[in-house]
Structures are given as structure tokens and as C-alpha cells.
Image (cartoon, rainbow, N blue to C red; front, side, top):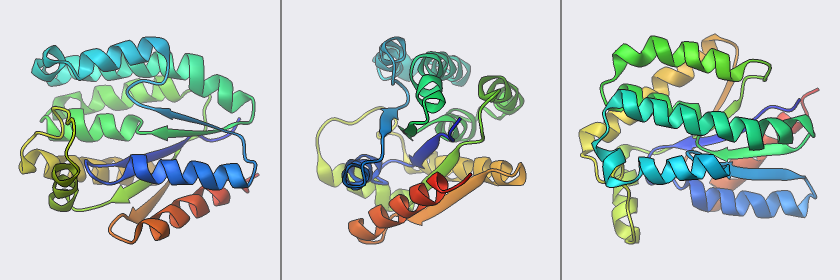
Length: 213
């Protein structure tokens, strides 16, 4: 079974843009892949995504959001991620459990859920290799400025105050420290570099992963 490859980052890190260009690079090399996202990725998970980003989801407390994200992930794993990995397909996910920790545990002051998070994660990850996390690192102030400059529709996570996004960044850092302490691999990419440089670094990390026995 292959390793799940996850692209993570705070608001305005450029994940969607980078993934679009990464897809082109993988197509050029005839590498089979599944591009997916969280929350979402399967029919049931997409319905839960709609709830998460609704006004009702915005008003939900940390525990409720925590449960919604893991419910969506259960469906995503069952119907998309695990079958693709078993077929030796590369799976690229726009967000995964690092975001759950950063947003629902660290940023929403749900630290009392941290133990539940790791217990739940162990159950969900059973039988899978530890994911490769590629983190697009950008200061929250710059990321939010990017979101505001591009206009268009935002989510209630985009609209949170700067202190929330600073806690998100700290949550990602805490999560990745724990993953590395457990022997997992995390690649941090400076998302302030020119776009082509960011894309090339992400592609390089993916190719390194694909060369692993």
C-alpha cells in the first residue's frame, strides 16, 4: 500500500493553485494519481462538508466540529483513499488530519480534545503507512492578505481574526513535531517563494516518496 500524500497550509497558503500545477507535472510524467480534498472527497463526506461550512456549522463548538470532520474522514477513507492506495495509485489530498488538529484543537481552544484526537487518529490510520505531509508555510498575516486580495467567496475560517490564524499555525507546528517524533515525514515548503519554485519543491517531495521501496 502506498503512502497518502497530504498538502497542508493555513488560509492563503496557495494549496489549490499549487495542486493545479502539480497535477500538470504528474500528467506529464504519466503518474497515476487521485486528487481529493478534506473535508469531502466522497459523496457522504461532501454532504458533511456543506454542513461544516454552513451557518450552523460555524456556530458549532469545537467538539461538534471535531466529530463532523472525523465522520467525513471515515467516509473519505472507506470510499476513496484506501481503495486507491491498495491499487498502488498516488493519493494527493488537499488537507487531512493535520488541519483538524490545527483548527479544531489548537485554534478553537479545544485542547481537552487532544487525547481524543490521537486515539481517534490511531484507529483511523490502522493498517496505513504514516502520511507524507507537505506543509506550505506562510505567515498568517500574509496568507490572510492574499485571501482578501483575491476577493470572491470566503468561509467562516477565512473570516476569523488574526489571533485565530496564529493559533492555527502553532497547531500545525505542534502536530508536525508529534508526527516527526513518531517517525513520520514532514516537508516544510516556504510558500513565499515564487510559485514555480514552490510547485517544483512539492513535486520533488512527491517523487522522492514514489521512489521509496
